[in-house]
Length: 242
Image (cartoon, rainbow, N blue to C red):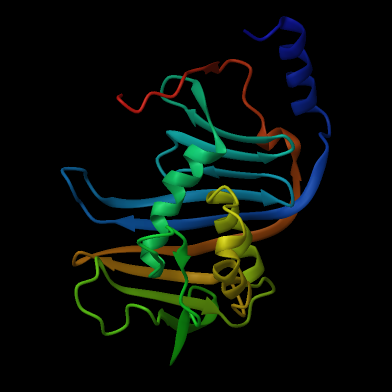
């Protein structure tokens, strides 16, 4: 599908100094329990983010998600068969917004609009060092002490002595949700107000714990080639019945 000329240009761009923007590179360790017949374990997720684009490589190196801003494109690359799929913004948002339930966000039964608690978090007063960062704990106020929730507890340890803020975390979540619009502005504003980046997040869902811990972050120049599809990959149409 790709021309020979385009393939040659791609190789040359990778070898030479490609256009780059300043951004962040992060590595985060995720630990999942064994659920629904799937094995759990630990895996490192890698994220590159600039003002325009985001790339996230999952922990088993099988899938890469690329979110481009100009033009708007959501690309899922499957490394097991060297294919990629493009999602519409609407499909991507629908899938991503489901994950907001872990933040205690509910939806109005008639209008369908999100009901975002304010304040979303509350400080517990606990402080400890995680990795190389001193952190303060915050928990979700909406589910604290309430019974009957799928999410029993959501704990976030925020680095108090970091040179990055909640603005980066808010930007990553916003891009991963496909920038869902003004109805979620209160949610993102509260993430931006975090004084630091979440170093450790622990979620108890149906009695099982899922955790994520920041291992490393760097402020660096990130080339545009990080957010491109390799010429050897072929496009595959989305099929939810697979």
